[in-house]
Image (cartoon, rainbow, N blue to C red; front, side, top):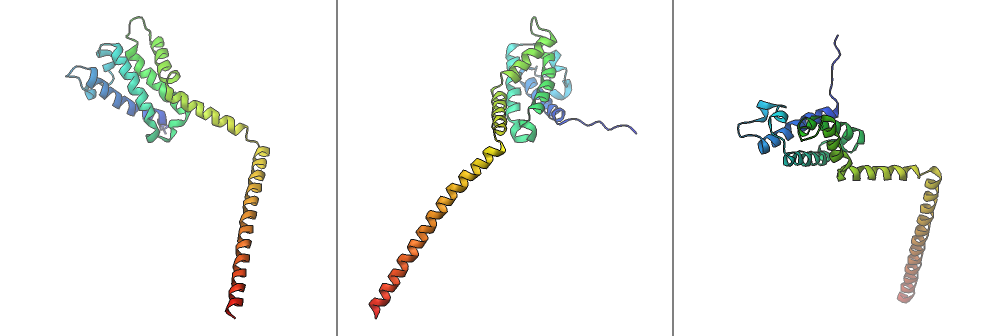
Length: 185
């Protein structure tokens, strides 16, 4: 029996990314006769390199990553994002390595820098997650117990004040009733 091969969530999303990005890129930078379903991945070799096209790919990829939040529950998982970006960088480096003086590894490094290290959305998300983790780390059972005691004291003071107000209101109402009864006799 042959083992069934399944794609990871990052690979499934990467396939969606390829279809979206290549279609947009070919319609923007490819010749009029070129269509995505005909060229598949050959567009990376057939469309001439330009910095404007590379900037378009980086911008479109950042936009894709930013809009993941609505589509995928894993979009805030750093491991998932890192694996997805690694797949995207490997895919796009076939095109961006055609820049003068670049090798495939240099193209990958530049893309990874643009998509991971210098991506404000991802860096802000990672900073927020690190801050939350740090706050959880400082939340020990002793601090939780102190906080609960303090909240209980505050609630007890509020309850005591409300009880006094209720007693005062009942006392005032009973005096009014006594006055009315004495007045009516």
